[in-house]
Length: 159
Length: 132
Image (cartoon, rainbow over all chains, first blue to last red; front, side):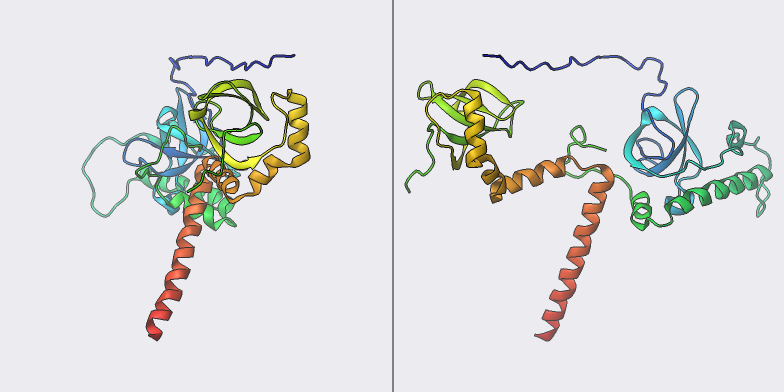
C-alpha cells in the first residue's frame, strides 16, 4: 500500500535586514497604518518609494489623511485594491514634503509651499475619488478606523 | 438518558485537536478502549485517541478495517459526508470556516450589514411599542 506522507515546506526565516519592501504593496492597495498620529486609518497606497517607504493618501477628503510618506514596515497591506492605474503622480516629489524654514508667521496667510501642497493634494485625490465613485461602501470602509475588540486574533486574521 | 452515538466501526467523526482539527474521519477499527484507527478524505490512516475525536450522528456501513479505496467508494455511495455537511452542525462549521477566511473589507461589509439589520429590527420594534 502506498503510504501517504505530509510534506510541509519548512518556513524560511529570512530577516528583512534591509528594511526595504517588507510589505510588497502594490499601487492602489488599501493599507492600514499602524503607528503615528494616523494609526488605524485605512488609506490608499500610491507608490513604493526608496528605502522602504510608501506614498499614501487617505484620500484627505474621506478620512483626513493627506499625501504622506509612510514606512512600509509600519503598515498592514490588505487585499482590497482601488483601480488607480491611470493616476498621475508627476507633481509628487520629495521636495513637496520639505518643510519651510521657520520664520515669522503671518496670521491669515498660507505659505506658498503649503498652497502648492494643497493643490497637488486635491489633484491626486480627485483622481482617487473618481476611482471610488461607484463604490459607496469602499468609501465608508476608508472612512472607518481599523480596531480590534476582545477576542479578535490579529495573527489569525486575513487582510 | 440513553447513549445514541457510539465509538463503532463506520462512525463519522471530527478530529478536534491538532493540525487536522475539523477534518472528517471514519472509524475503521478499534485498537483498545482508548484508541481507534481512523481515515477520511484528506486524512491518511492513523491511530487516534478517542478523546481527540468528536462523534457525529452519521454512520457508514462498512466492514471492519476496510482499505482506503473501498472506504472512499462507500462514503461516496452512501453520501455520508454530504449528509453531514447538509446538517445544521455541518453548515455551522462551514459558516465558521468562511468567516475565518474573510478579508478586512469583507469583515467591514459584514459589520455594516449587521448594523443595518439591527436598525431595521429596532425600527419595527419601536413601531410595535408605540402601538401599545
